[in-house]
Structures are given as structure tokens and as C-alpha cells.
Length: 420
Image (cartoon, rainbow, N blue to C red; front, side, top):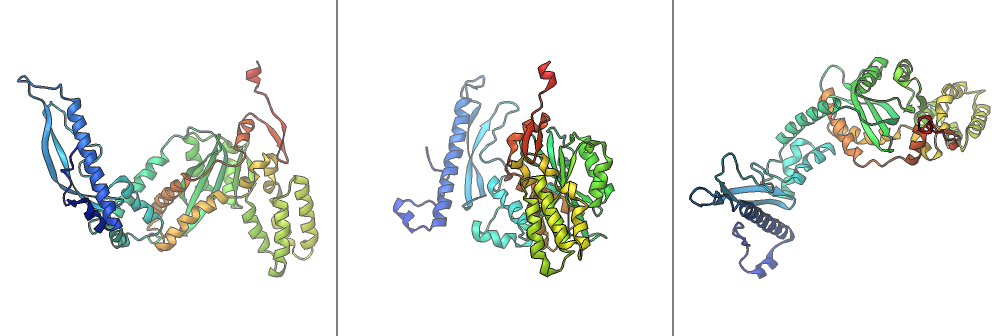
């Protein structure tokens, strides 16, 4: 196999000793790519050697080399002349799978753009930032490419919102996340985010919709859309104290059998805000004891201690806690191994920290539409790293109607149809 496609290579292997690490990496990439292109064309021609015309001449033959192309790969930008093939068969044309026409950068380099942009790098800073890594000619990795990417993300988001929901979901985390936008009358965007847990225990993004201040109407639009695309009734919904969410949940037939679980983190903040700072440490300890209690009875006992300590002078703090007590302790009716993920909306809060950081770096999203698409891309990136929830092996029993008390299985129902 020849390396005739590679130009400006050292004639003496000892000359490689004068190369720096980056130059060696580019040289290696150039050699490997050239060899692969030659092998690809030779295999293509060999596989069609039986194709001949009426005079016995081959219909598929070599046809020299193409013009020099600059290709940006992980080690930098290299010059390549790809071999050409003359395919005389009617309607047939050779097209390299390794180096398709008009390709200027590898898919891995292509992924740098959304990654850097989503992590906070301004589109205007792309050229200078990447030039030092990939060379002067960075194969189209410019700020203008970001504008194209944004449009692609918005289209991906629109298509994603139309997909059918083909999985069953046992839990839904629901929360409204707010951040600034630069354009439009409303300078604060409210994104209504829904993350579900499927029957395998996997967390999946279900919605990231722009809404009006987490109103009941906005949540109803989100849930109605999800229901129309196949969302089933979950076993439980986890959210903060937003009245719009719960008003919507209680009105929808879809959720008539779903339990409500309040987020303990949000509730703790609200309760502590009703107390003077000198008492917050003591109250916080009691709240943690309630949340992490091994049984509902023990949680109730801790609630009694809280009432005895604060109700006389700080009645609002106790009322804030007690009014949602049932919804705060519904997790006791589910497997203990799952409690850590059922007590809070942390899956949304932690994932959305990246979205908020991105909008801070860019001084807000451009508009609500872009905020939705940006949130979608960021959360889908997060989704790739989400692990199944703890205790996911219990989900099979739960879907079959198993009952739990204080996290322990007390009754495993048998499928009556199976018995019959």
C-alpha cells in the first residue's frame, strides 16, 4: 500500500525526531486517513472487477486524485487529497464513507461546538479559542456556525415534542425553573420541566416547556400534551409547593390515582424562613430527622418535637410544615431503597444548574423559544449520564400492585389473569 496521497512527509524517519508532539499527532492522523482512503477505494474497485462493458473493459476504475481538502480532526487541520473512482455504471457513483463530499471536520470535532457553547463559551470567542488547539484553518468552526446550530436545536426540540411516548412511567418529577431572557416583553422565562422514571428505573426527560409563571393552565397544557402522546398515570408525582402544579394534578383524570410527594428541600427552606436565624440550626436538625426517619411513626414523633419547640412563639413555622404533612410523608408507602430520590426534586435541580449557569454566562437566553431549545439540549446531554434510580428492581413488583409500609414489602399481589 502506498502513501502517495500524503505530501510534505519527512523522507527520513529520523527527521521525525525534530517534530513536536502536536506535529506528530497531525502527521499520524494524516497517514492513517490517507491509508484508509486508499484501502477503501481499492476494496470498492476489487469488489466490482467483474463489472465490464461490451469490449471487456472494466466499468469501475481509478481516476487519479481529487483537489487538496483541509480536514479538521482532533489533532488539528490537515491537507488531504482523496483518490477518485470513475464508476461508469448507469446511476451509480462512488462516495467515500470515510470522507464524504463537503466534509470539513470530523463528527467528534463537530460535537465540540454544542459542547463548548452549552458550557458557556460565547459564539464570538470560538475562533480564537479553537485556533490555538486546531490550527489557523479550523474548518468552519466559527461563531456563524453557532447560529446554524441554534436553528437546528430549535427544530430538534420541535420534533422531540411531537414524539409518541411508548414507555410506562412510575414517577414524575415536576418543577418550574426561572431565568432571564434578553428579548421580548417578559424578561423572565419559566420553563416547566418534567422528568420521568420508566419501568426500568431509567430517568427520562419528558418536557421542558415555556409556561406563564407555573400557572395551573400552563401545567395543564404540558400534561395534556404528554397525555395525548401516550403518557400513562404514574404512581407518584414529586414537586415543590407550587399551587399551580397541584391544582392541575388534582383536576386531571390522568392523575386521579397518583400520590403527591412534596419536595423536602423546598419545604425546609420555607419553614426556616419563618424562624429567626438563631433557631434555624435547631429547627433544621429536627427537619432532617423527620425526612430521614425510618418510619412514618418516627417522623410523626419528630413532628411533635418540632411543634413543642416552636409552635407557641412561631406558629407560622409549624403551620407551614404541618399543612403539607401527608404529602411530605407519602414516600413511606414506597420501597425504602427509593426514598432518597423520592423525597426531593433534586434530579431537576441538579440537572438544571447547568442551564442556569449557561444563561448567566450569556446574560440570559435570547428569547423563550431559544431558552426551551437550550434547556432541551442541556438536559438531553445530562440524560446520557443519568443512572437508574436506587431500588429500581422493586418497580416490577410495584407495577403488579405490591404494597409497602415504611419501605418494606407487606403484600405482593398476584396477577389474577395469570392465575385464571
